[in-house]
Image (cartoon, rainbow, N blue to C red; front, side, top):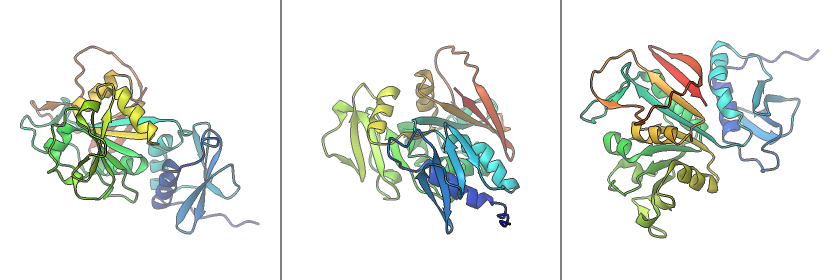
Length: 289
């Protein structure tokens, strides 16, 4: 009789999910069946269904072949749908906000609105995506690192959307060398081979519209895009109907004044399917379009 495998822990499952999310398979297998197999303490992704697989992805669905402990089961529920995309482009945005929809104080100075669990969630999202993208305002206000520090995983490509080249190269992510970094601007604002600090400068045709930005990134093999802010950037992608999912982490805080999160300047009345997750005192609403 075959001996039953021990329950998979959250750390084991996380390695499997990261391996699947970041896998680069041939285009003719991307839409088929993919297996994640355990190799030592790591994981290997290969095409086809294998009897010894820990995870099997097929048709946008992900099956786990091992029993999960309680923490691993929670991870699977929250993150598995983001990993089994069949090679298709996936664009997810996130904002942390107060009960009254504010993402920061009026001064623009950095202030933690949501708690440590949402910070950890953001780092998990970075680890699962090819790109973490922010607007120029987020870099100006927060000077973020945009790396994976609080969880196990690989740093994504950091992309700064700065259409009019407002930012100097003094910000840390332009010269810290911690991850590949790209500055996207309007085509007329870029010169061939130009660097901004250590960041590659890429001119985008079409005025840096959300559609043009995603086409530019996808043309470079970057299909999994995580937009981490700010409110203006996320709102533009939402208004352009370019988001597959929108995550709003809501803190039990009323600010009264401050920088708004979603602000479209028009009435959309979208009613997406919503998944909800408790992040300590915060609640994460994931809107699926």
